[in-house]
Length: 370
Image (cartoon, helix red, strand yellow):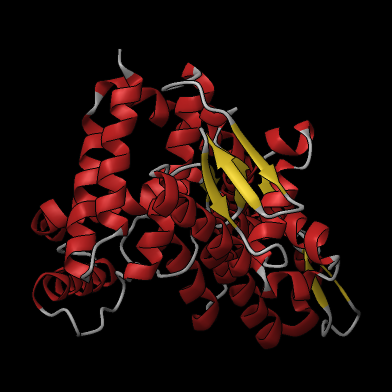
């Protein structure tokens, strides 16, 4: 299998998208890129890698989800049994129990998280019971909470895994923006909506919130194709440029790592004292005090640096000496843009477009030049 040729095709499709002058041409090029990536059998290993990473990333939260759901369902059974035995008629309390059951049966929809919504049904229901009955069922409440004598301070104990799950949910919400499975899912979702939005609408006919979302997405697709200057609601070009950059970075790195790709022998050198980058006798001149030159100097300083995959915060710390996280984040985009600028500048002088592998989180020297 000629993986060099496959990579060359991917590079061409990627560059079509990145160099697009209009929003419409960008999204159509994105579709062509993903279509090739998705249908090329030789690249199926990429999706296996993505799923392995996703499975590893989500293993703990998946376990917490299942354990939470079991705890919540068992709690509902206990509460209902007590309710029937004591013939409790409090409407607000009973309504919350019914809402829990309706969520289980998919009779009602929620825009929130499934575990959080069920947890709220139980806590709200118990609050209503406490407010109406006071200490009458104090011994019953002890099965589900720790509380003060006057019942004004309550800590729910019936589902410790729900607390764990919600903490993990918050964590995943942050880290997913750096993970290949998230970029893949976002691009795949747009790809499938573009070709099959009507089918998705048919399947969602009885799901109000999903139907509304699909209507907005369908309108966004029409706007992208026909109204260049009108804003879209959900599908933003800058978001999908970010997904594409990071997805392409992962695909290229996976190809290099798995197949040791090399097109030909390269000799390169960076003379940091003079700001001269040389590759196969072609010279590229950098202003020595510029951030581009400082970044290139860091990446090429020694063998360890040359082989290292640098995170943006490591780069800021090394070049600027900035340790404060808030101040580092202010310069995050600067690292990404500078890496791209270096590639474009080298390409303008030598035709080599990918000396650096650059995404919003990391920069490294492309392994094919090592």
